[in-house]
Image (cartoon, rainbow, N blue to C red):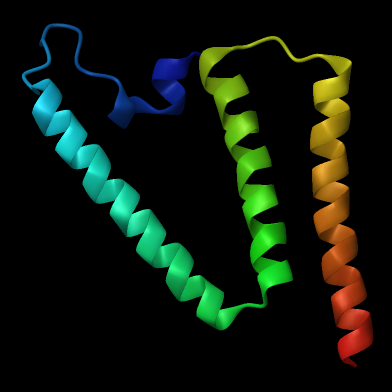
Length: 102
């Protein structure tokens, strides 16, 4: 699977050139950053700070995984170990949290 099949909406059509100016792209980036900040603030009201931190760690690991798939970057053994530790840590955190809640 090549990257155009993975994320087709991010790839411009082959025959068209981008008509977005740098200013428009910066404005769009600022809007998305603001929306991400607001959503993070709202989720902090629903979760404990530790749960928020665990979710953020998992999000970062998933972004690394997605970038490996999209860009085809090589993965080292230490990178794989790090991703496995993140997923294992999130699993153990959720398991222990459920154990102590009941």
